[in-house]
Length: 323
Image 1 (cartoon, rainbow, N blue to C red):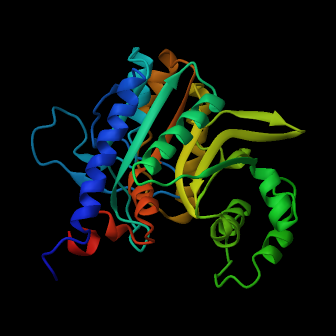
Image 2: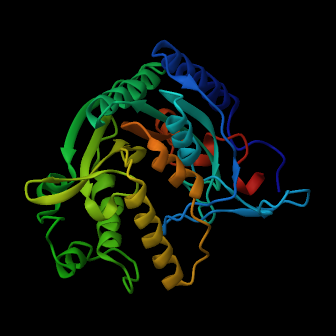
């Protein structure tokens, strides 16, 4: 084991400059910086995200001892929105179990913000503006393009992802070294995105993909477009790196509980740990969260793009192997 950092001093200085830029960016737009707990009595039920847990040894006054490290600040930020805080953001560390490798670290930095009364369109523009401002720090520019999820697969893979059957998806993935046993339709679509589509995205291009399949809605609203239900969601890519994931946020407590319960059923069927649902979030939605749009941006991923490196270790002071 080495005691030395995994990132260079130049990379650490760039991170500090980027943090300052992000704070100035939102200060100029009157978006409030807030801090929310890293430990929660509830966890993320998303079947594709694993949470760390820990047990508190002190006095709890009846509260649960088991706490879950946040995978994003989304739930407490939404509670603040329901309480009337208005436009807000948080810049801080988040934690995901089982994610360590070239592009992943179990703890990483996320920027997440919410705009009250906004739809996806202005939020996409603002996210693009932030990424472009970051690139301008190092003298780089990027072209900007937007495409619907459906059109991306139609144009580049030759099939409609909203209607294609499993055989069509498997055929498109031919040659990818993976055991396809038990993969769902959405799993195959994700695999094609990461292995067929993303590698072809241009290095100096920002690509915004929007209108995802309704089955990939997570916490986004679902609407109908061209006869099919789609999630009001976007992802922003800079080159082959996915940087941001944004939603026109779901505000319906009943639908949100249904989605949590669906996630829990998937976890139980797999034999995975099922963290408690966030009842505080559901109560906040029942109280009334304002219509809003929100987005989470991976700061380490943005730094990787700025440093032109595929290794997250190159942009964090100490990666998982040296922590």
